[in-house]
Length: 121
Image (tube, rainbow, N blue to C red; front, side, top):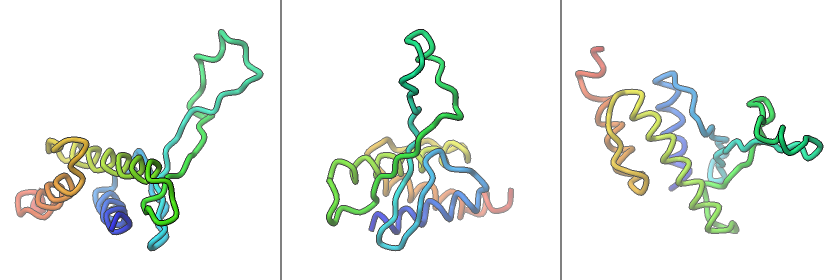
């Protein structure tokens, strides 16, 4: 089911022309969501370690499925997916239901973008 949510979020982001903060790699029942973490160069001095540039980001993928995966990684993937939903809700000016309400946030996003007021904008 998480893969379906990922597909829905990806399609809505494309429709709204919003690049997602946490991009998805869709793969049917084996979809992943990416988180970018700063890559730390161990050759830098300690005073330079706080000035990590945005170009040195490392991509880490988290599974949007549980089968054969660590539950913690899949739960974090759902957290990131909800962050993408919150990003889309903020883009259209709608308040999020909170970080634990993925389906409620998706429902509100769909309700808003399918409303006649939004479509006529």
